[in-house]
Amino acid sequence: MTLLQARPTSPVAAPAAPKRPNPLPGLAMFCWAVVTALPLLWAVVSSFKTDDEILNSPWSLPASPQFDNWARAWTAASIGRYFFNSLIVVGGALLLTMLLGSLVAYALARYEFRGNRLIYYTFVAAMFFPVFLALVPLFFVVQQLGLLGTYPGLILVYAAYAVPFTVFFLHSFFRTLPSEIAEAAVLDGCSHGAVFFRVMLPLARPGLVAVGIFNFLGLWNQYLLPLVLNPDPDRYVLAQGLAALSVSQGYRSDWSGLFAGLTIAMLPVLIAYVAFQRHIRAGMTAGAVK
Image 1 (tube, rainbow, N blue to C red):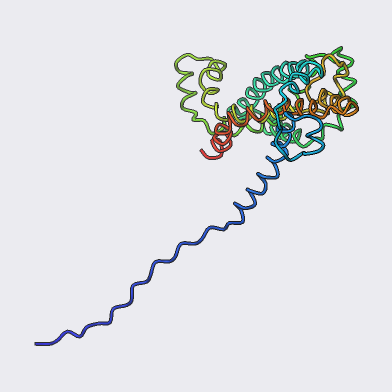
Image 2 (cartoon, rainbow, N blue to C red):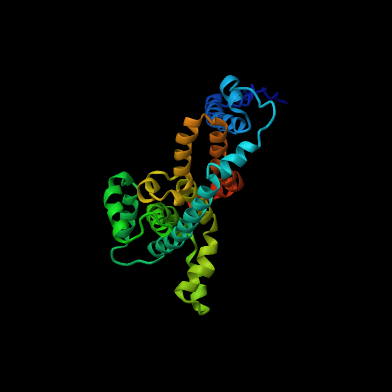
């Protein structure tokens, strides 16, 4: 009977300790959030203060909220009129931009024809063209068309300004949509227009919502184009109205009314971003992979 010699067993390797996450990115994001949110919060709080509180105790809470600051800014400072002017211009430009941009992006993404890539890269190149270089010829073109200082003139210029980015953004969405669905719709008797509006456009909803929010934010805060193309004070958009308000209220030392008007102007942007932030994240990633 032979005895088996016990073999030395190799020690079991201990599991590697999990790596500790790097706190620097989170700290950087926190600092960025504080730097971004603190001025907005300070402006909102200041809109409920009196002028003495704003000048003497700028970092304290208001002793008694002054809601009449908002009413005074809305009526006496004409913020209400500027607000509705912006709604008309931005709403019309957004509808026109989304319609034209989605049509062009769909045609460039789903149909092969001579000059397809040339047209696409022309839209991409237009995104990098500084708009202030075209202000002088744009002014004379709008003036010759009789649209200077009118709602249709601003709507058309806003749409032309936003269409290149819309085409670039939606192009990838339409390229990733399955072709089998469109082919099945054609076999069922749908025309090309019906396939676009009834089949492909609903499938691209995440991208439409995302690019719509980006366009809304950009057009709502637009100042240079209306400054040159909208000289009529009765048709001032909100950015022009705030610039005029900062001059007039600054001379009158009505700082509370100025902060109230500023808060009214940024409320739609904040509401739109908070309400659709999930759709923005989904839209940014939906067209990235097939």
